[in-house]
Length: 195
Image (cartoon, rainbow, N blue to C red; front, side, top):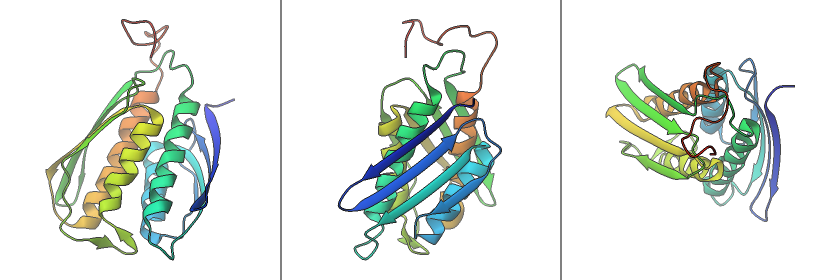
């Protein structure tokens, strides 16, 4: 059995159902009602080689905020559950990723302590139906729900679409690296003996 999780979160604002397989093939079934956000989550699954199903029904008549933030909360919880006890995994992941004129660095640590930092500043307010400020809100929610350190450095900014897509793909590659097993690690990679 692979490292999988299924998480459901229902509130008065959103109903989110996520299934995640960290040892997947990059298959995605994404339905959030926000076209660009679906595109980003599909890219995350494909480039991290995660199997990901996301069904989100949110109050889009208000705006996209609750749907995207709550999806981040549920995805973070799914990552935390699927990783399990973290024995044998590399723990750290990092990827510098180009997308045309944009260059972004993502670094993360599955340490059990939430922290999010990003210097990305988007030149536009929206990409399709998605507010660009929601990129930050999504990754903040993921990092805190998964209890991970998550950092983004925008080494070269440019087109908003390219910036967001590079961030999602870099996050996917960094998370894939961090969750990979290393045969030299027989317990958890920590001097404390626990994560």
